[in-house]
Image (cartoon, rainbow, N blue to C red; front, side, top):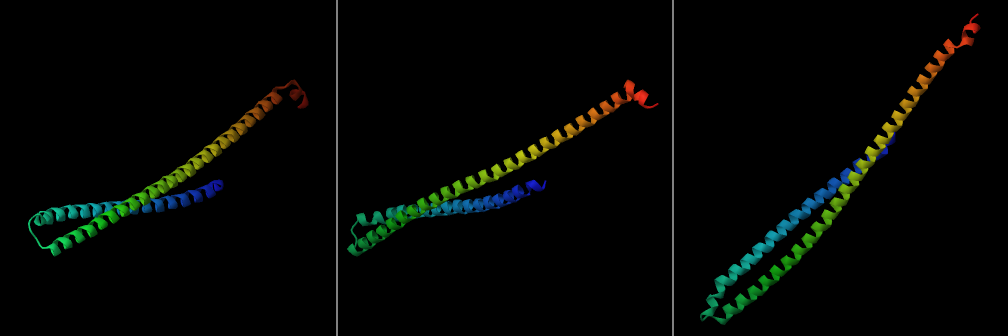
Length: 158
C-alpha cells in the first residue's frame, strides 16, 4: 500500500487545510453575529433616545439643548451607518470564508474518493492476479492428469 502513501499525505494536508478553513468560517460567523448585535443595539438606542428626548423639544426649551440633541443624533446616525457598513463587510467575509470552506471540503472529498478508487483498483488487480494464478494451477493439474493417463506415458515407464 506504499503507492497510497502520497495520497494519504495529501489527504492529511487537505484535511488540515479544511479544518483551518472551518475555523476561519466560524470566526467570520461570530464576527457577523457580533456586528449584527452591535447594529441592533445602536439602532434601538437611537430609537429610544429619539423617543425620550424628541417629545421634550416639542415643548418650549433652550436652543442650546436642542442643538446638543440634534448634534448627538447626527453622530448616532453616523455610528449606525458605520455599523451597517461593518456588518456588510463581516457578512461578505463570512460568505468568502464559507466558499473557501466548501472548496476545502470538496478537495478532501475528492482525495478520499481517489483513494477509494485506487484501493478498489488494487483489489481488482489482485483479484485478477489471484484468478490467473488459480487458472494456471488448474491448467497444469489438468495437463499432469492427462499426461499421466496418456497411452505414451505407460510405454515410457517401461
